[in-house]
Image (cartoon, rainbow, N blue to C red; front, side):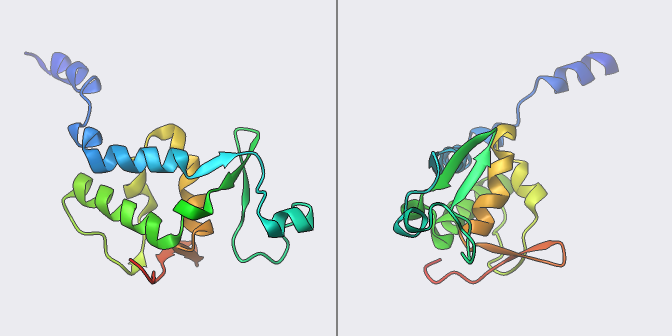
Length: 143
């Protein structure tokens, strides 16, 4: 096999780590973390959707469509648990529970069409906080 054949073959090789169950589960979780339409929680309904003063965002816009975070399954500790499993499975290393989060490292095992959901979920769940342009993992009570 010559060099050109090797390079062409590499283009069609799929990273087998992407099919590991925790990685697939994280992508599925990320896909289902948001529901269709704006948030209809008591606060959003009472305020007519005005989220001024909210610590965390409730309604998001992906691909021109309003979506809302599903609170029951997206607490910071839930997101962290799913992320830790996928991270360990994909990288074979533990995700540190504190410090900076390498979002590009997470994107390595997240389906490209779901990349736009990562940061909103991480911030809205309270998993991370943006500090000086870096994402810092915050302590989670049930992690």
